[in-house]
Each structure stands twice: as C-alpha cells, then as structure tokens.
Image 1 (tube, rainbow, N blue to C red):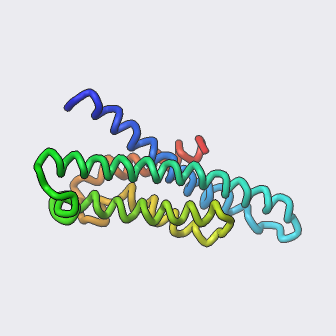
Image 2 (cartoon, rainbow, N blue to C red; image 1 turned 90 degrees about the vertical axis):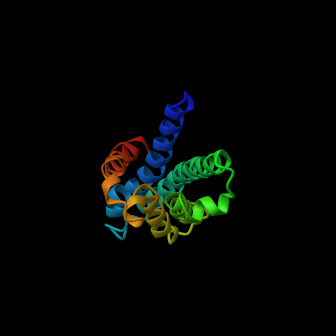
Length: 161
C-alpha cells in the first residue's frame, strides 16, 4: 500500500456516489413526481430541467470512475510489462466490464444532457452495472463492499445531488 491508495479509493467512491446519486434522484425523487398531474406543465418542466442539470453531475462521476478504472488497468499492465488489451481480456476482466458499464453510463448521461429523456435507462444500467460489476463477473465472494457502496451511493449520492 502506498500513499496514493486512499486517495484513489476516495475518488472511486466519489465517482460512484455521483453517478448513482443522480440515478437515485431521477428514479427515486423526480420519477414519481413527473407526470403526476398532467396539467402541471411548469412543475414537470422544472423537474425535467433539474434532471438534465443533475445528469451533468452523473456524467462527471462516470467519467471519474472510468478514468480511475483505466488508470488502474494501465498501472497493472505497466507493472507487469503486459499489453493493456491483454490485461483487460484476461486477469483484469472485471476492469473491462466496468469500463463498458461506465461507457454506457456516459452515453446515457450525455443523451439526457442534450434533452432526450431516453438516456436515463442507459445511465442507470451503466452506473449500476459499474458499481456492481462483481455480480456481472460472478465474483460473489467479494460482493459485501460493492453492495455497501451501492446502497450508500443511492442514499448519500441522492442527498448530495
């Protein structure tokens, strides 16, 4: 362990909290309120605009998480003198899956930012998949911390956003 490990861990939590917090805000707070009263267009417009602005925060979180994942894979490859592609395909498959998930989240958040609400499901699937990649890679023994981070991200991240 070196001095940058805690900082890297903190930044990883921050990326996850921001991206999942926005998803929690959209589906837990804004979603139930949108369209509740069809005649209240002003409120719906305000909520949709709030979601679009919040998606910029989610995009920043997903970009941060992607950068950290990629930096970790590059560090692993460099330390072992391996090509990055080989690292992502073999020993660090979890990192490759996480990168794909966060790429989906990035696209989803970007689509929402430009005004298309159809990006929300992409953002949600990507952010949730990135946080719970151990489920996707069938690494059940290591699920305690990711589930804890996921739950905390939905709770604290939504409050933050």
